[in-house]
Image (cartoon, rainbow, N blue to C red; front, side, top):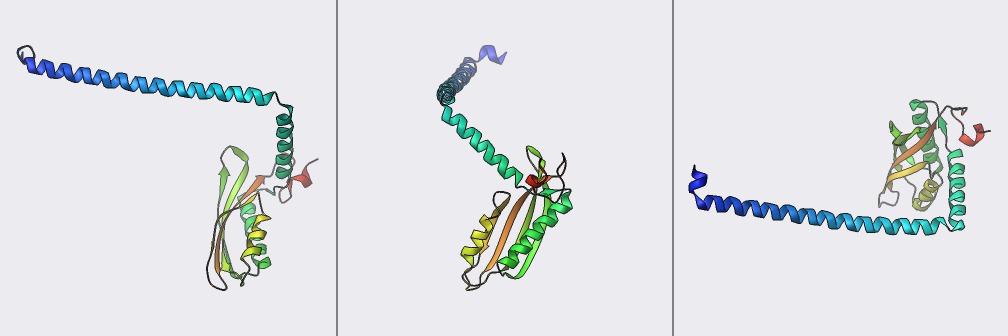
Length: 192
């Protein structure tokens, strides 16, 4: 009853509905413009990919990259279970600490995790703390580089003292044993 008798209420509701409709139309227009820009970008990308696909050197580069990746995979260590993966990274870090002449090295191995998207791989997190001899920072970084790509440094903290304290957090990747691959080997040694 109040709706029919109160003209101001009807006008206020009408204005609110018009404002809501305009806001909705503006949102739809923005969405349409965004979709048009995305479509134009997708068409441009498709055209570039078609041009590249016609060039034989890209196919050769892709084959070369695949061969290099296969070579890297053959260098990966194989473990039978989580405990062996943890022992492998602990042994690697212990040898690394001895080679770098760290004093008071402490190795802490953490969990073994699945590698998302790669069920044949596991990753192990580990930490090494110790004191580095004077002026040995450069050789430390060079030695860490030799572990790539399957031993990756997550974090490296080096103190500013003459014999700096270091804290190294690493992530190591290992292939699970199976499919004719024996644990404790490098994949290339067990591959036919």
